[in-house]
Image 1 (cartoon, rainbow, N blue to C red):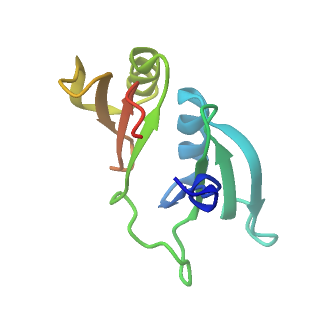
Image 2 (image 1 turned 180 degrees about the vertical axis):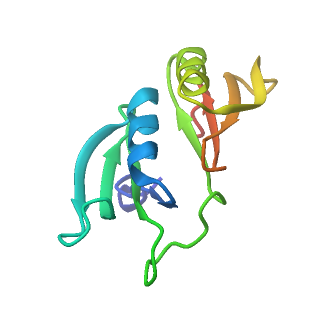
Amino acid sequence: MSSAAADVKVWHTMSFRDADAMIAWLGAIGFVEHATYRDETDPSVVVHAEWLWPGGGGIMFGSQRAGGVVTNVGGSAAYLVTDDPDRVFDQAVAAGASVVRTMRDEDYGGRGGSVEDPEGNHWSFGSYQPQ
């Protein structure tokens, strides 16, 4: 792998109908706020937010709105690598997610499962780290 490729970071980008409810959900599963910028005239609107995943990387998101860049609310999917996928899976379900695939050991290594968040986005949690 070239050193340039090793420096690349990917940030998943999403849009939410109810950004405050999703902020609570993201916090419940382990994301940490890095920055959240709100509309000065309507503080319920998140213009841009950056939340970090403790294992590396993160997501950027904002409220669904006219003129917003990301418009596929409920149409996103993300895979989060964690040393304890069962714990994160259980936290996601406790915070309102619906089970899509129960936790299981994978033939290719690791353990994983997936849920749908309250806005219809697909989240997979696993211990498998793609190389």
